[in-house]
Length: 494
Image 1 (cartoon, one colour):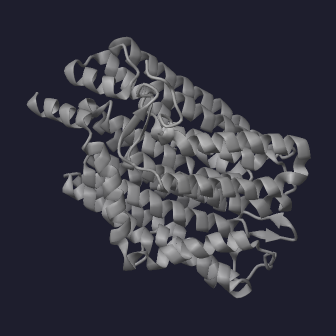
Image 2 (spheres, rainbow, N blue to C red; image 1 turned 60 degrees about the horizontal axis):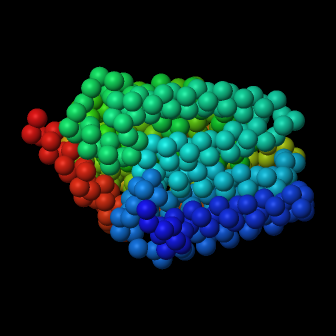
Image 3 (cartoon, rainbow, N blue to C red; image 1 turned 120 degrees about the vertical axis):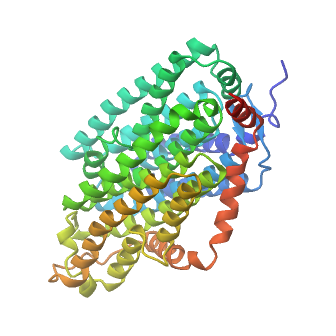
């Protein structure tokens, strides 16, 4: 057994740094109390920026550590950068909101940080046990965040619903892992790939179904979406923004890793499942969003639909498909951060308002906010030449190239239906009679997030190849892996 040294752990350096930083910030918060919340929030952003710099400065060639439980490769490195970027945006958006809604607690940014560590461990997981530890670290922090406004009945209800349903999904996932271990004798991804390419049984397929069901809950995919609208509406808006921006990126990265490494030999089986939940998510997200009048519930159904579009790329089951998923997730995360930046500005007389009708005549009262939200809504609906159009275009292109013509056509149709409720928001802002003005105080950090989102949305079309090439390099790491190639060859031979 080799000696464990710091150099041996170097692929996990950003994760370890954030873990140590989180514990230091937690102690600082306990000593100084809630008055340290702003300091801890800024320190959290600073620590995340350092972690991003460490990650960028590292070699992303494939490296497995801790007996193959964790790995770093181009795919994990790129997805970790996305996660860190989303965490920074989430904390930045929340700082003013905590004061406005009187929930200034130093635990808030610390919980976001610990949840982010869990997401990074999920992305780097190369063993079912490591997967579960990362997933639960993320989930436990999210449960607390959903209910952090303890004196608000909707927040408490959201936290309880999320906890109960999340616990059930974790049990389902753990049961699937136990079945896989029972039939294969291993939890390591590489050994699972070797075992399943040589020997497949009904018990393994049942285990696969349970594992996919557990992860589908984390990405709000139909039929495991039931928590999403209620939790999005009931949780504090800054927490809802966090839920929408980051966790689904990490969960989808984990799902992709599972499907194309340990479960690569079971592609015929999981492809049917992904095809169905992709279509169901797009359909439910499109049609259910039409009847919503709460902006947070509307964005909840929008997120369900967007996960359906991302799963089209997974169903395409090739390098082009995963490249499209990575591009789509990047664009979706940037757009979502901007949308919630505007939603957080929906306040009158110090109170948050959430109805779509509250946006009436916003173009006259706050033209900058109205045009910002209009651009982002046009982008989410897939109107060219905005970034959202390109994201959907590359997803549908990957589907067509993989022969998924039915899924691509139905995806386009549901996108047209969903455009109705995005355009309805724009109609309310520009054509309805003006309502009372929103409060004018907007923090600089929030303006910065909204401005960055608008900038990327508008100028992305000028140089899309840069993101596409980086995404392709990340995706190729999954398909150049020897286990995937071997499994693919065995499947073709059979």
